[in-house]
Length: 121
Image (cartoon, rainbow, N blue to C red; front, side):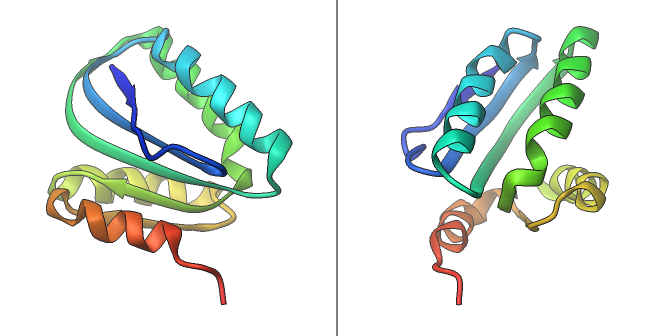
């Protein structure tokens, strides 16, 4: 299940993955992606993975569609997850992201948020 986090604002979309991922979870994300794309040239994404109990096949297909449609617009992506989970996800996604993607371990959530909020130099 996806939970939209309270610091989602402006061009930053933040959500937590906790439990089973279902196709309906993407119904929460798609409007946010589309809104930020209309209002901002680039977006930032914060994904916090606490627990994945499984992914429905329909959700996996939806993930690919959403990912490939919107991922090119993100200039920064922070993935916060335990150990190898985040590293594996970020290594899979890096070839498709035009911006910067970084992995942060679970205890580094604040560091991840700070990095996303840094102004570009």
